[in-house]
Every structure is written in C-alpha cells, then in structure tokens.
Image (cartoon, rainbow, N blue to C red; front, top):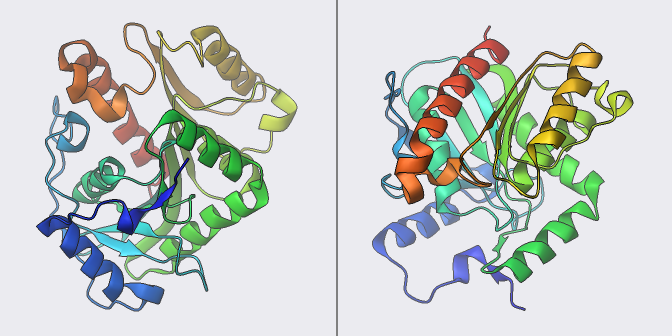
Length: 288
C-alpha cells in the first residue's frame, strides 16, 4: 500500500496543478496576504452547483496550512468576493481525502457567500483505492482527540479572519459526515452540523451534548447506513429536543450528492432537494 502526498501524486503537473502548487508555496504558514477570491454567484431556484454535477472549473481558492506549526496538513480556503461579514463553513472530506471535488464544492459555497475551509485530516495524503482509504480513516479515528483538534484549529482560523460573522458550521460527506457528527459532540462550540450519509450515533444520552440543529441527507439504497438506522437517529434527536432536518432519499445510493452528474437522471431531483434544504438550513444556523 502506498499513501502518496497530495503534491507528489503525479509527475505530470497540469497548468492548473502548477498554479495550485505555486499558491501552496505562497500560502505557507498562513502568511499570504492576497488570497484568491471567488465571484459571488448564488444558485437560483431549481439550480445545482456545477461542483456536484462534475462541470466545475479547476479549484480557484488557496491551499492553506491552518494548523499552527504544521506545514504538512494542507487545507483549502475559498473566499467570496465583496464585502461581508460572511458566515463560515468547515468542510470535511470523504474517505479518500481532500481532493479537487471537495475543493470545487468549497468554491461553490464561496460563490454562495460563505467563507469555506476544506480541512485535511490525512496530513497531505490521499488514498487511491478502498484499502488505502480504509487505512487512512482508521488512522484518524484511532486518534480522535487529534482529529477534533484539527477541526478546532480550522474553526478558530475562520473565526479570526477579517470580515466574517464569527459563526461556523461543519459539514461532511461519508467518512466526513460521521466526523462532522463527532465534532458536534466533542469539538469547540459551533453553530451548525450538516451530515451527508455519515456514520451515526443513536444514544440520546450521548447526543444530548449537541447545542444546535442538525441537518442530515441520507440514501434509501445505502447498505452501510440503512434508513431504519437514520430513523432511530432522528427519533433520538427528537426525544431530547434537538431540532433536526433529516431526510432519506429513496432511490439513490451512498455517495450520491457529491457526484450527481455521474447518474444525473436518477440523482438530480434528490440532489436538488438536498441542496435547497441545505441552503435553508445554513441560513437558519448561521444567521446573524
């Protein structure tokens, strides 16, 4: 098994890849003064972001070392153009690590008017197959305090930026969705958690430490997180009075939302409804 640092996975660097690496060098130790900006261009009613349709341009934001004294962990910051203050998001990658699809989603949120920081829980590495991905997730989960500390650093970085509201929501997909729930339970206080088909906890006594509304999108054909488990999770939240917007989409499978374009005819309606719910949720959770 070979887990390759992100910056050295390919010997053939495209123009976009060269620009990304150059930006990484410039942004070392969080000293870059001139971060790239994403034009504000919110999606209209009935429109999905290009990032989840697979039609987005290469990432436009900036690689970022957001963990103090750590030049290996490399996140990605997407800043909107214009004057804020802007609400902020911590985005948590899937089991293969921080890849361009997640960076493009960060750009999409910047276009919506959010400052989005996509974190790196794998110390600059990505996996290229299930075996590598599983090894990476197990490594991170084996040291949960370090995982939570990584996310706390991301949230602090966002709160300390100029022209932000100071409110933070965390969001993740698959492995990242489960991590987002863990962060709601064990991280520094934040204002929102959005879970996309991530692993769940059903014990009301454990869930009682959550301090904000929970958003959840799940797939009816997901064999790993079946609908009955999602129902028990929602029931546990209801039992202890934690507001939630949780929905299971019947005819889609695990992982559908980040890749609507892969099966657009089947996934588009569910993907759009999940996006509409998500935008409404974030407006509620991060409103001033």
